[in-house]
Image (tube, rainbow, N blue to C red; front, side):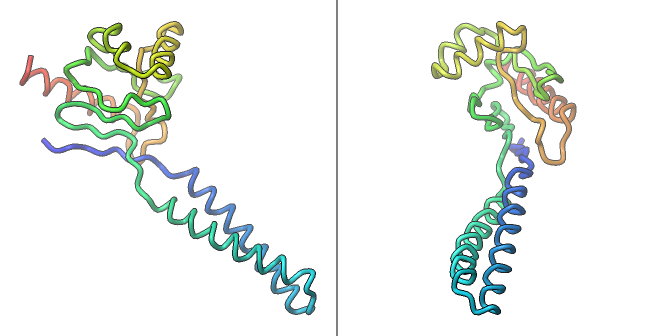
Length: 171
């Protein structure tokens, strides 16, 4: 089986692009107004701002056009890149089951041995897992609320199927 890459929506990057484009447009307008009025007081700052915001606009456009993987599902496990506190690669061998955490717009991961798996993580990620546990949430969460072209339930079904396929071969 091949790996499945679930991409992230780039709504934040698109908003940054639109904001920088509006500022670029205003800077060009200021530059043109200064050029027409032959005013160095308007033309010079407008020209400098147009260059700066033009470069920023191009950078934001390139960022918005990049595809960023949210979750990659391989046959052996999951590569999570959904948040800053993502757990990275998680093998299906370590997973007991999945559940839906609708209030977080996430899929919960319940490992087979929580304590052993939590100890493998970095201190920051350990604290996040302990916090989730104290709030009676699944220890690990895959934040899939901004997944491109897939709903929470679709991703949950796909993960559950891959886990069942893995177990049918290796357990």
